[in-house]
Length: 232
Image (cartoon, rainbow, N blue to C red; front, top):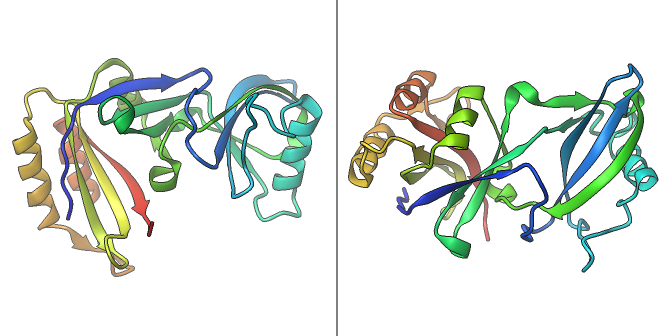
């Protein structure tokens, strides 16, 4: 079990990110569908060969090349037959200044799931390295009330819990972020430590946090962000 504390700031990724977050590029594009609808959204693409050059560009950064990339990666004859596009990627920043990291969050009610055969054409708009910890947390899909909370209120403190171990300090991971100014760091530590002693065993044999425990924490404005901590 690991516990850490620091101040947290909230940022919002509704425009271009400036930081290099590794091998995930977030593409911004306009999607025009065959049914006549259109929208602007963000599409993260991860991979060993994903990168941008010094001008923040790559071979997919044009209207035609971007659509060809979608066809190559998400056609009916590929592993991934659809993909998700986000209207906005909200960032919860953990740590101080450049020594911390971000968790990327989206409103789960606004996610658009697309198939390439339903797209008429795309317009490439921008690309930037993901400015969030995609390796541990991926993208957190949250309810509108929680999105509203992280958009208008700065978190107070947080605790981290590694509750399903695969080996040496690796495995399923949870970050408990507190938005309640009446809950001190010591009180949050106590709450998470108490919860860790009450974790139940799921059907797969791993320890789990129950929906009731999640609800009880949410009532205190403490929200759980899940991830996976792999080997370095």
